[in-house]
Structure formats: structure tokens, C-alpha cells
Length: 147
Image 1 (tube, rainbow, N blue to C red):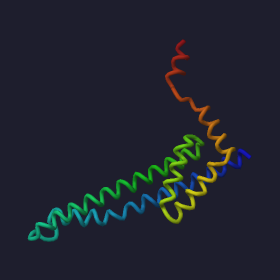
Image 2: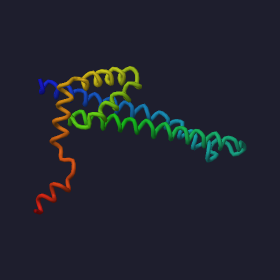
Image 3: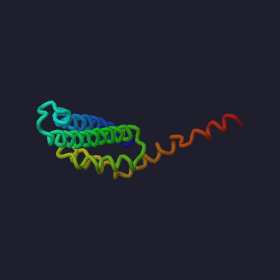
């Protein structure tokens, strides 16, 4: 049963990587607005319109915020998939699965399936066993080696 759970978690991790890539790709769409806003801000279109600089700066700021948020979410989903594959940081994986639910339709399907899988008692035990086997504090083991 444990091998089956590990295989399921590995498969979920792979899907997390794919969805993270799709989120990162979708977060690149505001680059078009960023470029157009930079042209407007520096006066690449017309020097006669002073309001064009303000509109361009607004485009740049909003596009930059959207790109940063999108790439941040993609990194978060990728790290969540990595933790699923390692069976560590149970709460982080639960939050990552919840965040995935906002990306319809693929993220919602993956997020719900991940949440259902993480609620299984055998999977919880697998995470708990891996959390206990990972050394939490490296300084303790170094201290013991010196003695």
C-alpha cells in the first residue's frame, strides 16, 4: 500500500510541475502590456501627450505586479510539488493544493485530487515518518560528532 501511495504522490508532483509551468507561462502575458507601457512612459509614441506617460507608467506598474504574482504562484506550486515528491511539509502541500484550486479547470482538478489524496491516513503517516527521519537541526549532529 505504501508503494502505491508513493507512486500517487510522485504522479501528483509531476502534475504540479506541469501546472506550475503553465501558470508561469500565463504570467508572461502581461509582458505585452509592460512593453507597451514602457513605450508610452518614455514617449515612444508621441511627445505631445503628457498623459500618455502617466498611462504608460500605470501599465508598467500593473503588469509588473501581475507578472511577479504569477511567477510567485508558479514557484509556490513547483515547491509544493517537490514537497509532495519528497513526502515532507504536509501543511505546505495542503496549502499548495488549496491554492491550485483557483486555477480553473486543470488546477482545480489537480488541487481537489491532491487534497483528497493528502487526507488519506496512510499518506499522513507517510509524511509523518519522513518528517521524523529528516534531521531538523544540523547543529545537534555536529555537536555530537565533536564529542
